[in-house]
Structures are given as C-alpha cells and as structure tokens.
Length: 59
Image (cartoon, rainbow, N blue to C red; front, side, top):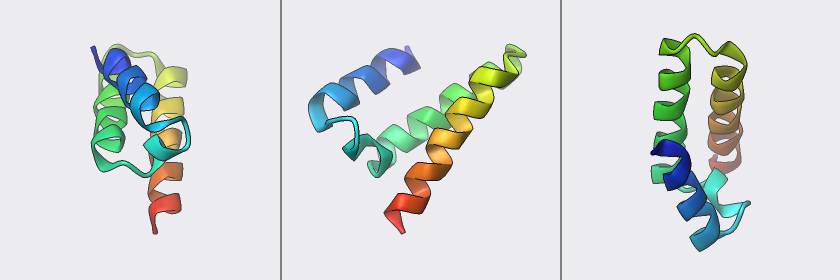
C-alpha cells in the first residue's frame, strides 16, 4: 500500500519532487518502519536513506 502511494506521488509530482514533498516523506518513513518490523534491513535502509536525502534537499 505504501509503495503504491509512492508510485502515485511520483507519477503526479515527478521523481525529483517527491523527495521534498512532506506526505511522500512520511510515506517513506512508514514504509521503512514496516520493512524494519518485517526484518528486511536492506529495504529499510533504502527507505530511510531516501527520506533523509529528501529532508536534506528540503532545507
């Protein structure tokens, strides 16, 4: 569900814009938390990294 939401954000806003769009960053955080709970550390790290780079771009 989170991945589909991110795909929708990317389609509507473009791949670069979602890294600074707060709802998309929140979705990435939720996705990262889900992967952590499912014990999928690589996907969790990727989601967290995407969120971090989005915040850095925002500031």
